[in-house]
Length: 343
Image (tube, rainbow, N blue to C red):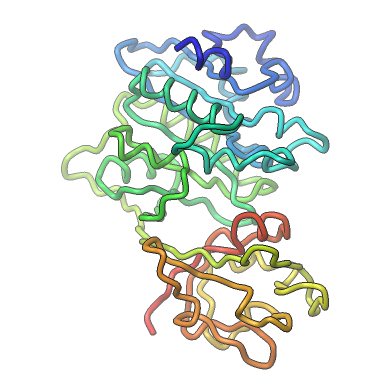
């Protein structure tokens, strides 16, 4: 694991001087991608938590810092992975998803690993596979305000049990983007927890309380006959701008944008949008600037959306997730995820 150790700093049972009295000091002490091991009461098992794959999603690292500062002994050995430290520290703090010129780290967990971000992802994967944790939780914030939910590529009982430690809603997707949660395919049960918006007070609570349950429980795997009461939503589709498309956020149509969503578009997160409610203003290119491909790569835009009087409407009710109000994220990632409801 020598290559992994040069790319990914490894710390065992950190001193309080490393933890520091604030998250910012903690990150400065780490200085780069870091793996932190804590010895648990049961040293025969390990659980893992990854966070800060995106530098503008701080709830997970706040929760980890709080846990370390409290000096809690976990039920089992614990591995914390704090990834995009430099992006998080870049001024203003917690405002950069990733550094300019770099790839989105949570799209790098599949070959090729031939750039800096790929090497970091590969080192993280090597470490996880060498440790063989009984589960991995990946903590994120949504790009807009909204309630917490989980995301997984599997919906078996173990993934429902893990989700229930943080939230009662789970999105199950067959889409593969190179995210860390896809290592569930390698028999490491993994759930991404979207804790809510980065500025939502509730998001910190979700992360902190969930970590306490996850690391404090003797057993986190599914128990036979137990109903975890997790709502499952399958295969949401991403509404994306085609390359070069421009998104804006305003209550009035912006002439220099291909699509203009409302300033408070994030209010639609997790909500049902009826077909008669306009979603956005469109520019002169209309629908031609948008794409909505499912996990099979099939274009579904015309099936779900239409234009009327220069505005974007859904053809029938849809449920929205991860609606962003960041034009940068809208252009580099997606405008939102959606699930079609009964027509």
